[in-house]
Structure formats: C-alpha cells, structure tokens
Image 1 (cartoon, one colour):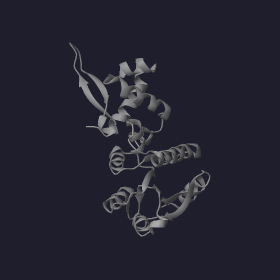
Image 2 (cartoon, helix red, strand yellow):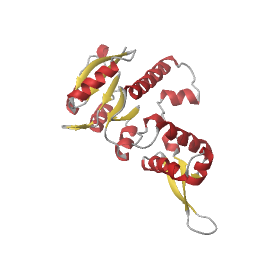
Image 3 (spheres, one colour):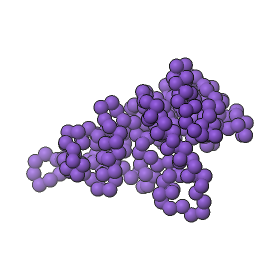
Image 4 (cartoon, rainbow, N blue to C red):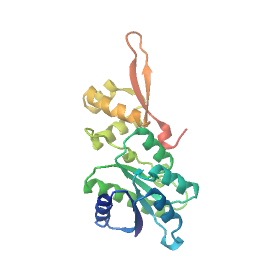
Length: 231
C-alpha cells in the first residue's frame, strides 16, 4: 500500500481528498495535516518502518507554503514523493515546485475522474521504478524521473487533451509559429496561440522572434529542452 499524507488547511478539502483516495486501489491515508510546519514534522518524525510514500500537498497554508514544506524536506534529504494539489496557478509557483521534484501539479477544482487518472499514473510510475533493474533505456530513465507533461496545470477554457497534442507537436517539430502549429494540428491560429502562450508563461516552451525578409517579426515557440532534464 502507498502510505499517503494529505496536507490541506481546509477541513472539507481534507475530507474530500480522503474519500477520493480511499476509492483508489493501492493507496491508504496514513496521516493528515492542516499546517505547513505540522506536515514537515509528520514526515521527519515518522519511524522508518511507517514512513510516508506520498504527500498530497496544498501550497497555501496559514503558517507557510507547500513550497516551504518541500524545501525543508529536501534539505533533510527526505525522499517522499509529492503531488501538489492547489488552487495556485502562477507560473513561478509551478517552476519552483517542479525544481523541488514535485511529481505532478494538480489544480483545484477537479473531478474524481481527474484525481483517479493522476493517482493511477503515479502508482504505475512507482511500480515501474521498482521493477526496473540493470541498465535502463532512455524511456525507462524518463519514467523513473517522473518526466510528465501532465504536471502542467490547465487553465479554465483550455483542454488537457489538446494541450498534450500541442506539446507532442512541439517536442518533435522544433520551432513553430502559431500559424504553422495550427496548420499541423488542424486547429485555428487563435486557439493554438492560447495554448502556446500558456506553455511559454509556464516556462515549458521558449518564445522568440523570427525575422523574415520583410514585415513584422513573427513569434515562434520551441520546446524547452531543460524541461526534459537536458542542457
């Protein structure tokens, strides 16, 4: 069983996430906290044979942030996995949590179906990590490191399925303008540009000006390879 600590300062949210987690095979609620400092203490003071495997971590709490919690745990070499579950959508928070090794970033509110998908994906990742032995392929390395674009929050009005299509196109096609991406994806330029700008603001893609022979420069977007852990 995956021993899970739920951290959120709202009692109703704690109850909701507990009920969600109890519906998914392979997980158990091993603890709950409503404050940042209590979460740090709960993880660090837990006996080794009762250690938490996963934290469902809110970012905004009265006595600190989820970012503070994760920094404190990493500074003490705590290897517990973390899924951020929060209403915070700003790109800086996403980047900081990603840099601290958060496995996924799930934006409130969400349905049980979305929660189930993310937790099931995490369970599969954990099982894969345990089963991989000897020399690993690049795909296996990516899986072990939890490289997943599903951690990118999806703002209201955008579709996660479409976001993944845009990401897949950028990762294989190189630099594209909104018009070029729209043509390749069979979408409108305006719609594609919204996804590209969201990815750019999150640091997932790089935005630059493309200068042609005449006229105004065109904005192009390119996959940020640092997202994959490469230079």
